[in-house]
Each structure stands twice: as structure tokens, then as C-alpha cells.
Length: 101
Image 1: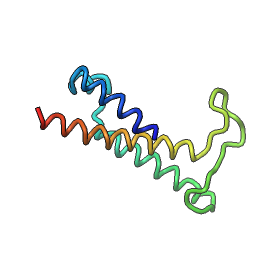
Image 2: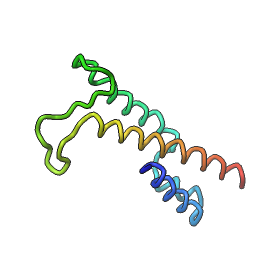
Image 3: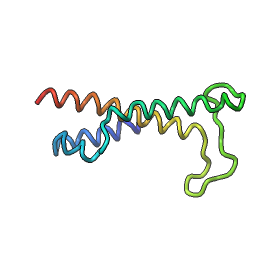
Image 4: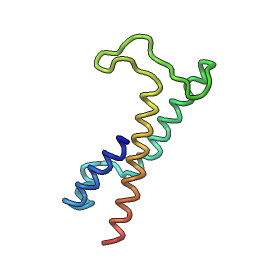
């Protein structure tokens, strides 16, 4: 859900200012976010295997981290999915808008 909301913000910015200006704000091609997000989410799913737990088991850092609180594998899975969704949506929409001009 968060990835879709972030994508909508970039799409609205591209409607107002053009795709080229929006691409300058992002700094990276949206296509590069897809493997990064997929890698982060896949790695977070497989970390429990090294602790002899089933895949996608939530593991948590025993101590709280200042500002973040409790950190676990679910946080990294969500970050990976977020980047994946933003990358897919922006790649599709920017590709369509560039070919429609």
C-alpha cells in the first residue's frame, strides 16, 4: 500500500513537471529499484534458515535500537516489497508516458 502511495506522488509530480524532471528527483532509474527490493525481501526471508527456522519466520534483534525500536526481518521484508512496488509501478508508468509523447 505504501509503495502505491509513493508511486502516485511521483506520478502526480510527473504530470505537473514532466517525466524528465521527476526522473532527476528520483536520481536512480525506477528499473534499478526492482532487483534491489527483490534482493532485500528475499534475503530477509532466507535469514531464518541460517538459524534452523522455517522460511519467513520473524527474527528480532534482542535489544531495542534507539529511534527504531524493535528491528526484525519483517522490517526488511517490508522495505524490500516497498522498493519493488515503487520500481514496478514507476517503470510501467514512465515507460508508457515516454512512448505516448
